[in-house]
Length: 619
Image 1 (cartoon, rainbow, N blue to C red):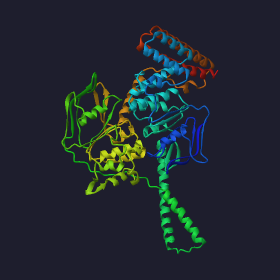
Image 2: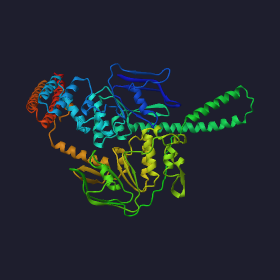
Image 3: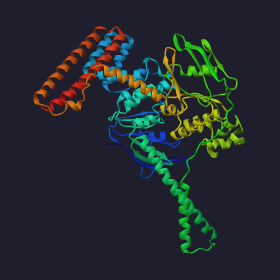
């Protein structure tokens, strides 16, 4: 079923063409990712298919299926600052969602009469499963204070509210612009599983490569204004892209040889030319235009020499730190070694930034001490980003730090040359900071950190707003970085590639040092969980394939009766929970617990009813 179709669409800003005559078809069940360099027009294309802007071009056309419900997650959500979180999250005309919203408000206000009315309404609408879904989404995204105003939230919290809002609406099509930004790894893994449902249709931009691999079934690359479609996973896309680039390189080499040959001929020709000569000159111009259309992919290579690192680097001695009653780090000791590569993992609020601030001296420990070696020169890339005036030019930002940068073997680079290696061509070096995209600002910020010649790099969420091409180049540089490296990131691929062990902040001050990658640690966790599950009896454990084999009529009837009995038992449990809920309208904690239990029972009844139908069909 066709949902959205884009035909011969172009978008340009002044002389800059973002994309030209592109075509795209989004069918039901497609989970598409758009991949491109920063500044190529990814967010603009999302606005196009979201119906916010119209395509340019005489034959351009945007077709959106009638009555299609589209939800769009922007990088900067536009909310009313005075609205509460619950009013924003459940801003919907769907009766069931409104019933759940009113129930949550009644619970928050501790109004027994209103709660009773809401419970009746939810029962009438059979909306307990929706209530359970809402609870799950809010819990997973750690949205706790539903009465808090939007204006009091941080940027990351507003993003999570926006994500919760569109997931609760259950739209036909999800348009997601960097959905993993401002989520911790635990949230990303849940969202990854949630969006992998075959019933969902989505179009997204993300730099998270594990997310791309596990969620998407179509990759669309926007390269030099044109679309390249690959049906398959991110791995399939990489293979096809490498093949395409190789073919382009071969073609470009042939064009170069032909161009040189024809150029020599043109230069030898006298001014007066016959018809054949003019035809050959026209052919030469076509070759020249085609040759110019092939652009070499920019490469961000640099070999800045860091300061020498002595034997004493950084040491934690029985360090403890907390705020109020919350203990973040308790009695932690560790000595950093040369060329060490550490990842720091933990849910939001577990103390990752506190750990970094203790390391850099921005915070003092409550107990213990942190000792930093005399030769240590920190380079700290934090989440706040570039702190310079918006009316400053790119080149001046770099020159304020250094006119020249020392390289290995006694060489040096000018500020202009260094910017070019960071994918800022000479014309763009003259633009103002205000004209840069979010990703370009992050790339420039990274440059300002590296040119200070640090020998101990600390990267706090370095992957936010960087495109995949820049990330790959940055990874190559960091693989060769001859100093200490500490990384906080929600990008599991980035952490796996660059770290050899991780500090896991487990809560209540516990810091575990795991010798291995994040994925290895996660695999061990999953293995332990699976072993625990095998020991317990699980509902519906018998595979349906075994149940649905042809069976004698009496066996089928016995199974039908067995399932009907289970459904009756579950209905009794549901009724019991509902009675208990009505009898405890003044107990908010118990109300929340019971509403979740009712939602779980409703799901179990639905599964049993589906199984019952499958057996009945065999009679």
